[in-house]
Length: 218
Image (cartoon, rainbow, N blue to C red; front, side, top):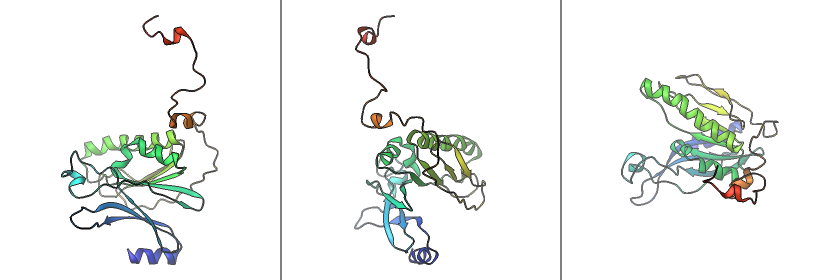
């Protein structure tokens, strides 16, 4: 990690890198993303909130303690948030980042070494899940996976929910993209999203009409 921090300073690059974060005593470590700025300084750390498992001693939860904090930081006027793997299955997390003004969510996930039938399935469901999250919240998403065979390739989604770049499958690849927060893109729910986020689940003004309230009449 010290070598990465040194290189970040030398190359003037921001870096988000995954690692474990050890805790004290018998507490299990966090599964984490560390944020290093272009001066080589550790800015913050995100801990995976939704570790896989149905109880505290199976799957991810057998090895890790969940985190409980959203993390955001700003790079060149772009406000960024972080998620790890199974976190992206929870639309509430994207909504909270939207509430905090985040414009780009960086997601590191591991979905590799699958059987072919599972690969074909996840090649549909994973991009669809993140495209919906991007479009519903009008934010960009960078989804980064490993490259072991039968791995869902890394990809980038714009705020319209369109995949604008995708890595080659099963190959070491570098994706370079510009996140232009001033680009004129279509935000389908901009008119009423704020109200929905505040618990008002309709557009316009509700009618005061007996026929509107009568749900068992034709």
